Image (cartoon, rainbow, N blue to C red; front, side, top):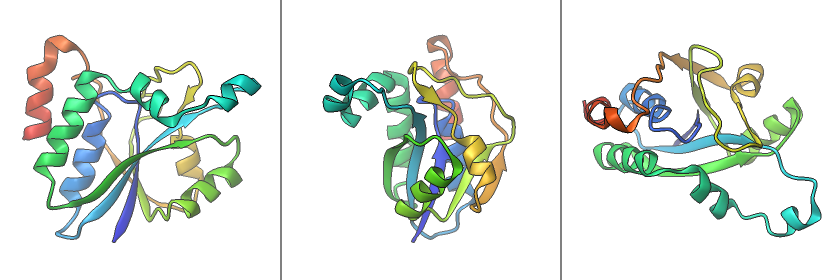
Length: 161
């Protein structure tokens, strides 16, 4: 079973990358990792009370959760698992260890750089690390056009088409 790394910024838009990846997959089930780079604080109290669940809760908004559920329902036959993983490293060797530790087979990334918007003050883009890695990488077109609440019906069309 393949494991695919998809970078995310926790916007519903970024899930269009996931949708494209699933559309290109054959009938084989896949494991999906939504990857997000986040720097850890140097504060001892922050490190003691660091909680991945609380950070995910802070980053996920209703639109992202809804879009993720739509994709999970539509592609149930292709998705074995979907999880969120944070990359905390500072260099390529740390990222290569992240790839190895998560047994990632390949990645699907947006074709344009600097299209993701990182909500968390310590968040960063993992795409440069992906590009420098030895991972097989597919690029897909990606536009930020469905992120506003006023375009909710457009988001629904994007994800359900």
